[in-house]
Length: 380
Image (cartoon, rainbow, N blue to C red; front, side, top):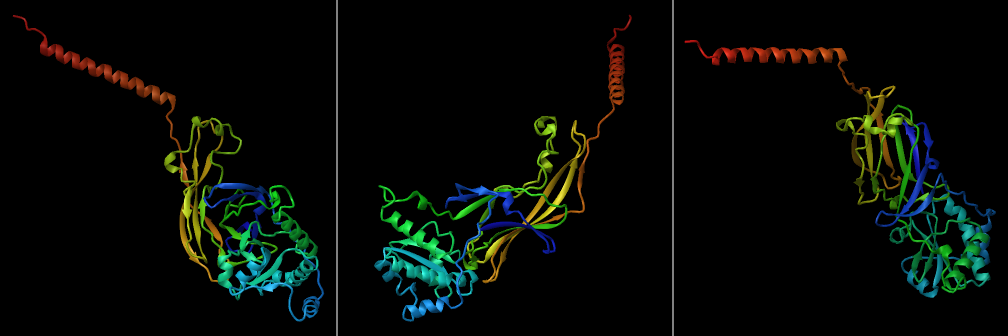
């Protein structure tokens, strides 16, 4: 669900740069697990079209009850004991996507019964059963989770929300669980580990004016569960400008000809820093003051500009209804640092060298004359 946006300082104009970054899935140790893609965007999901009276018709046709089982802590274990294989819709009544899915889900549950698919279909109201949904780590609504023997199996369903698509998915998963796909009894299609984190990397062109970089969880097909957002993060690299002078210049490959002084290289102060959040509704905001620094380079045709960063981070608390987001807020300093190299003309150097040599010769002559006068034997 990760999305990265750039906003101006007033928050009125923004540029979505999610398509300009790469994403990696991380395991629980923070190690790269799987490449998610470059310039990828979340796929639009197809929804089932229903009439306004469809849900009421489904209820009437089932004797005033719905086809899917409404689950709660009291009947959850009994439902799992009765059905080895289940699929559960974790929803919120206020979620527009959940409302749109509701008649589709009931029709799907009806089709499961008609086709005698060995599958239990349930649903959980995450507003009424908040703790249950927290225990199941429901990150967004709706979450359609496959469960075997009472335990969730990743990945969650991300396909189209139509009756035909759900029925086809259920059949394939049932066949996979029952060993009909291959001799091992497990299909590679559903063999995917849960990835609790992600890594994003990329670059963008920004104007030399104050701005904000936002990293947040969002989806065109879900409502994010604000109660479950954990934005613990590590900054591996964040810098402005090019690190070694103008792009394509030969000094990028022959850096021994000259380099920006180390004492002024404060271009990536957040490198490797870890920003943990131990409670929900918390996140770090990073305030950056950008100071442009100019230095003359040997054999360089024009001054090189390096952007030094002064960084300050603070932990921000969000309301329960708000979705936290990581923010990098930068401001360009009106002052800049200028480094120049003062050289000496060759003729001044030669003159000074000769003056030193002449002065040394004269001094040695005076010392020699004095010593001869002192130690010269006197005539009798």
